[in-house]
Image 1 (cartoon, one colour):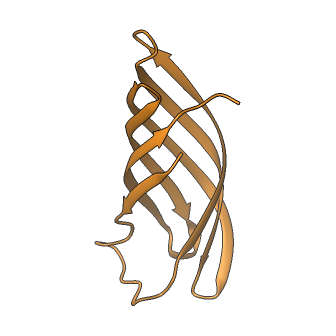
Image 2 (cartoon, one colour; image 1 turned 90 degrees about the vertical axis):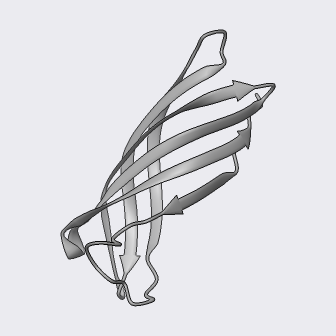
Length: 104
């Protein structure tokens, strides 16, 4: 699935001053289809590696979303959160997803 996302992490709490934050999640989740397999909800939990300011750490990450599936195309909204212990904050994002679903 191709993901087009906008993340507004830390905007009110901290200025990253043009520093790079790298977030690499490893998650396990479920997706359930409803109403003639046209509406779906999904959720996942996992661990993410966060690299910032020359240090790296792992922390808890979770997400949930919902959307519609029409003729193989999926459109949905997805909320994600992860903990960043090095600055004692959590970062949240709301993502719009558009993708094509197929079975292997």
